[in-house]
Image (cartoon, rainbow, N blue to C red):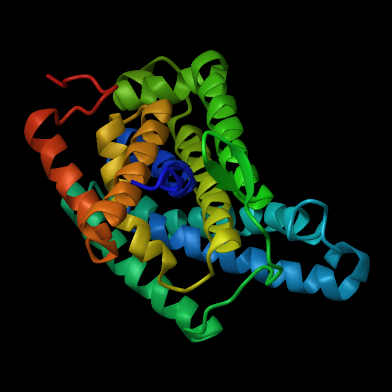
Length: 304
């Protein structure tokens, strides 16, 4: 078996894990499976692409590659703007759709179906604006270098893995030790009781959308940097995102990342063993096995 599959699995798993964090937070705090989350990845990637082109046109120097990476300073700056626009999109969607359904006391299944419909609308709008033609942040060619143990990776690939690890660690520390994190955990455990104790549940919901959408944008840019940007890129990742969130345990940030890495590595090894045409089925098989054998996930707790 080719050991290079490990690097490929870690890269795919890092993207899946970051995206799964938003899903696991939405499920534990907002109390519904958010199908629009995959589209936040795609919208974030395209927002960043548009801003990259704008900045590159404004300041030519920003387009010069930052050694040893394949992109210029314009991409990380545009990423910050892309994150802000993706967060704004998520907050507007919650204000216009999900917030109104919650205020009316809609059943969870109604909110889930609304998210499914909103997902299709967002995906179609994205394709209408940008067309289905694949786009790229950079077309610079990078040569993979040896990193030990028979593995090879490009600087961009190592940056993606390192960025994902740093973001997960930072977010885990914030949620575990900060006042905001304690409020989020309280709302996830019992929203009504959290409100009685003076926690601003509406603010917690907004913070959840901000974190989820921001990380979705980063995940979309990471995927677009190493592969390509397409309107359906978020939809293609939706099943792996759900599988990673459930495998890691709903509400667990490290669990979502570990679940994403397991999914990514499983897909990479499946390609090596049985062929690339079965990659999409790996997430489904893992999801079914988890739901049958350990529905609470690796780090989740059984609910009464």
